[in-house]
Image: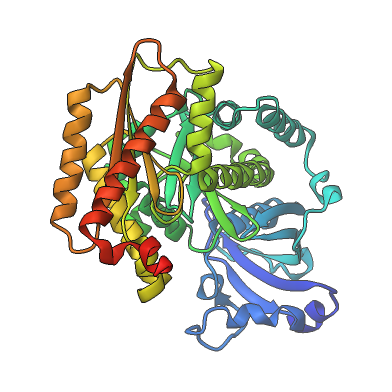
Length: 470
């Protein structure tokens, strides 16, 4: 049979497959019968694959269980099928077309060989017309999820509502959205009841790794596919035995795992367990589009959170910024947050930073700032530490006793005494009752300058002010 002539007549990335249907209704492995010249790159995907010949096992080049599922359905039921998926940053349109003219008569034992043509088109951007080709119930399910995602302003409430909707669509016993921030390597597990940090840690503990490493293991288990829709766990047992044991321990018998990507960046997974296996095709079609909707919402949240973090946390020292400090004070003054009944305030100015910057360079100055901030964190523990200026730090100690405040300052002095380069001028103020937080800060600042004058009196060689005059 001249498969090649047939394939070259097709405009598009075309490939032809065959498989056997046995008398008991089971299927053989899928065989690749040919590809056209436009799609010849498929044969080079696996550099270790042997030279192509018609009938070579499809898995020689690729292993996409979802593709196989649809191909089997199309070929065995003699139905033309269509898929539109977001896979690793590309929108893929797949057309599955049975080719009965290539079918051979059944063998003596009843085994039949069937053929199926697959034509692929891909693009970088979404085509709304292509989305509309799905069935009415799939379109309705996707619309409902979209409404859940956008009717609430709070990100976590929206994710929780979407997870509940997906759980219903899948007929699942368990369903979660697992967000992944590759930059910070932070993950979050959200189900219909909200954020589930305890379950997240338990899941990671069962697999003997961190939550981010769980995500990387799932990514590896997908083996370049965009999802796993498994009616049993045999594939998981083969690909990740540790994950398999964790699933069995938690009573999972089947699973749906769908990656969520924005462009080519992994931002999460849809995870559902013990789903209604009779709904697998609807689940696949629904989640193909749902993953795209979720990707946009998750990435936007991560972007905004990142901007908020950068505006409130100093990138070098990892303490609060001046903006964050001012916001805190404004909330106290404006009455949106009640002032603590007692407040300890400390101003700590890093001595000698300008000298280090001038003589050793700004990299050395940055290292000095980093070490200084580390000592502040040790001395002041869980209190609020802010970098208010280049070399100046402010610490708020809500509800601390005056004795505790002075002990922490003394601990800071002791720590710096054991370093060769870090030294602080420190001033404090303590306020209780009906006090003015701004006056307390001013008092601590004035006290700090007195301490700094004493430092320069004892170390005149480090006083840049005196050197600039003379």
